[in-house]
Image (cartoon, rainbow, N blue to C red; front, side):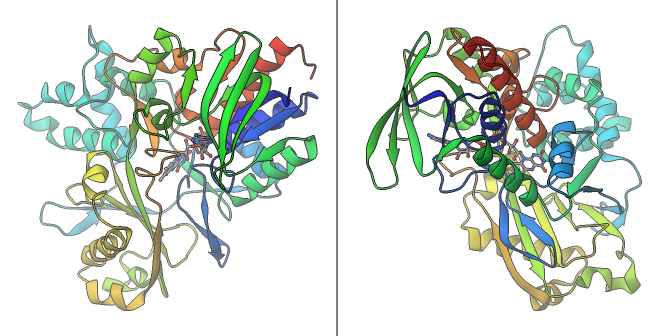
Length: 440
Ligand SMILES: Cc1cc2nc3c(=O)[nH]c(=O)nc-3n(C[C@H](O)[C@H](O)[C@H](O)COP(=O)(O)OP(=O)(O)OC[C@H]3O[C@@H](n4cnc5c(N)ncnc54)[C@H](O)[C@@H]3O)c2cc1C
């Protein structure tokens, strides 16, 4: 045996699981395809004046206890997002948006809980199409599903989203001060201190298993193949990777996963996002129109390719993030990164009729193409029509040998988030430790 437990994937869930298992005196080997851990949490280096451009996760949603504890232990903290919201009016002009975006979406989407049978968000919203008073709420609900959930309304479960909204999940957002980097660093150093062996640039290709035994075939960066054995494995692979088949990047389970698990995977989709970070020499938007947008946090223009732009408010910085989610992101994804950065820059300048000034102040942009990334295949998960219990089924252990973690296995409304990933990593570690008889 090379280890007691293999942790497959070194993102937030994998790091949390590995740390927790090693602290229970189990021998842990974490296998990560990339040349870094962190997965979909990836601060772009270097930070500027303490502000990091996050290529992946940026916000903290709700109380997020696991995240908050890690930030405290890392000697840092979180700052709540604050500032004004602006939206594009029908005439294209920016106007103050005092209505809470999520409350507006929830007002209509929560009614899907009354449906006798689940249906797509698209279909559900069409029920209100003849009500002129519902026009704005429908548009907000659609923008929320696409932008926040990164979901395609034609596929997403209306009841799934309604349940999430009604579960009391707090969407109030904060950001880790100086980004997610310190939290990742702490997890990495805790893992090393607890004795976790981490194997980077190690792509898992086949997971052969029988009760109390797994043999994992890997390929390393230099093309070398290896078989690694353990008593159990915690699988934290993104749903996009688990669902992918038909080429050499497919991860094969031998024997295949039980039918229920495969059905569940069929009901959990990977949402798409295009997130572009734009650095400016000066926060020019704070000065235009006599400082009208000085305290802006969010700009929402739901009819445009990038439906939202945000500042780092309450921090004052030259960083702007452009965001497109769901079908808008899929449509944009055909462009090269250079084109997308240019597109985001033009769109942002155009908000104020200041395209030339935006270009003049522009220092550079960064992004990562998560949709074409073979180790992510999308941004984060959402539940498709009829997939009510799919996350719970995906989370369930198989034969006390394969355990499952990762954001898609979060069952308490935290799917798609960093905190959901951390929490599922700890949950899977507890499950595996109990089976292996490991003490706390
Ligand atoms: C653009 C973007 C913005 C986001 N914004 C937010 C946000 O603001 N707030 C928030 O809470 N969440 C956000 N998220 C979601 C958040 O990043 C994820 O939910 C979370 O990081 C997932 O962690 P995980 O451990 O489940 O998966 P991952 O981080 O994806 O970890 C899985 C690991 O498995 C590895 N892997 C894949 N295939 C293989 C293989 N064959 N062999 C070995 N290893 C493999 C991957 O490289 C990866 O490191 C965002 C995500 C994206 C992409």
